[in-house]
Length: 119
Image 1: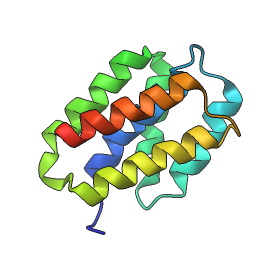
Image 2: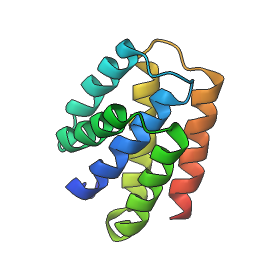
Image 3: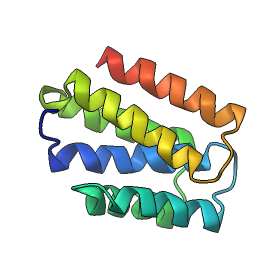
């Protein structure tokens, strides 16, 4: 896989936050589990900082999602198909961290995948 640039992780942190918040309120346990998945990545600390910023500001899920997409669009030259597929897989891992993927989370991941592949 091509190298993942740090810039992409900043956008991904917003997408991860939007996923976790998609069911409504951000649960403390879901936040912690998501952070654990993020921090395991090469530049995961950047994604985690972006996630925490959105969490601190209580950013609405849709706004966080749009921030992520704008960030990916800005850095599209680094967003190769392998990277896109990796981020989709990583979102699925975050959703699975709760041991249950809701219909809203599944719909969110499908939307993310479609939107990401359009970039």
